[in-house]
Structures are given as structure tokens and as C-alpha cells.
Amino acid sequence: MGIETSMSSELVYGHWGLVVFYSLAWSIVIFVLIRPRMLRELGVFALLALFLIDEFTELYGVPLSINLVSRWLGFYPQTDLFLWRSGELWRILFRQPEKVEGFDPYYVAGGVLIFGGLGVLYYAWRVLEEAQASGVPAVTGPYAWARHPQYLALISIMLGFVISGPTLLILAMFPIVTYLYVFLARREEQEALTKFGPAYALYMKRTPRFIP
Image (cartoon, rainbow, N blue to C red; front, side):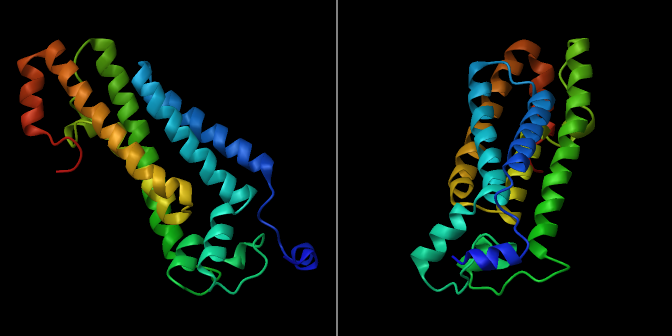
């Protein structure tokens, strides 16, 4: 790797302050909006936080996945992996050209899923807070579209990061954390049935768990 090349071009890695800031900011925002309380919820949240830490580490800190994949596959021509234009994981795997300035389909699609999911997460949090304060199940707003809009929003956020900035670790973690949120959803439904009885059973019949 040429030091001169790195010094003369815009570096986008090695910014550990950004890694810490974005990892903490996203983790805190999500923690506040989902309020995990039980041990199983805290465990899955810890995995989600690890997912975010790895994403921002490889986005702003050091491009470990790009380095490993390019070395394993041996066909990617770039030499300075600390430059943004050295490539990204999907482009390496699919042998696509360097990223060009302007419209980028990976970032657009990923951004829609990430910030759309964050919006749904916030909306669901407000509805859930009101329902819990009233002692009734949340069935309005996003809960009228899906029984678990918060988990659906978290899966959307993770998928957005997978599309826009994949790493080897988050590619491995995404299906695992998604499965765990589906598991949590099922457990919570059983608890809600016990607590709210036939009213929640009727809600389950008319409202899909995640996607209609």
C-alpha cells in the first residue's frame, strides 16, 4: 500500500472519532426507542449494537472486509485500500467498476431502508408508549399494519446497512439477528395473549406479524 498515494488523496478511513460517535449515537437512539428490559431483549440488542459497531468501524475506521476479500479473490486491481475509491464489498464481489460521483444505487436503496426504518421505529415507539400507559395493547398507527413494527423497522435498518455498506461480519450477523427478532416477536405474542386474552387473539387474526 503506497503511503504517498494515501497522503496525496482524500482519506476516508482512520477516523476513529467518527466510529465512536456514530456507533454510540445509533446504539443509544435505538436503545431509547425499543427500551429492551428482559435479558433476552438485552442480549439481542447487544448483537445489534455489535452489528452497528462493525459497520461504522469498517466504514470510517479500517476496511477489513474489503482488504480480506480483495486478497482472497485476487482479481480486484486497487492498491490503496484506505481511499474511498478503492472500492466497496459489493463492487469487489460482483467485479463492478469503482464508485463514481453522483447517484449510487447501493446508497440510495440502503438509505431509504435505514431512514425509513428509523422513522417507523420512532412512530411505533410513540404509539407503544401511549398504549402501555393506558394498559392496552398497541393496535393503532404502525401496529395496525403489522404486529411488530419496531422489529420490522430494525430489520429494515440492518438490511439498509447490508445493502449500502456490507462487511463480512454484518453479512453473517444479519440473518442471525433477524431470526432472533422473529423469535422475540413470537414470545411476546404468547405473553400478550396471556395478558389481553381474546382481544389480542382477534388482533392477531386481522394483523400480520411483519408484512401483509
